[in-house]
Length: 79
Image (cartoon, rainbow, N blue to C red; front, top):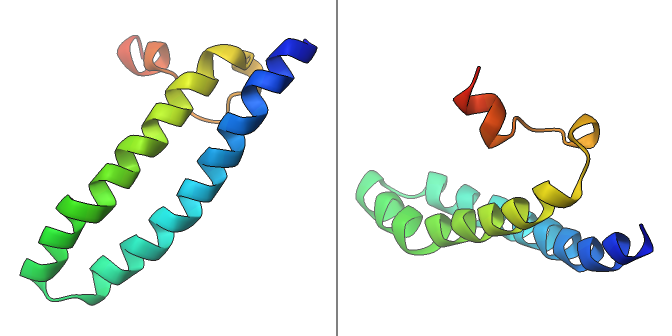
């Protein structure tokens, strides 16, 4: 269990930091006109979303299902 904590902690730290950055950048995009906002979403926000997904995907198998707050891929596929 201690090993899992040491592996998961830096992933959660990156997840939280990237989430904060994602929220800031999303607000910026929403304040822009449609074309600039769309380009900003593509160039800035989407890569952050992909980064967030990478952290979540890495964390998910380390966390017991009863503690995972989001639907898993299995939940979505076999609903």
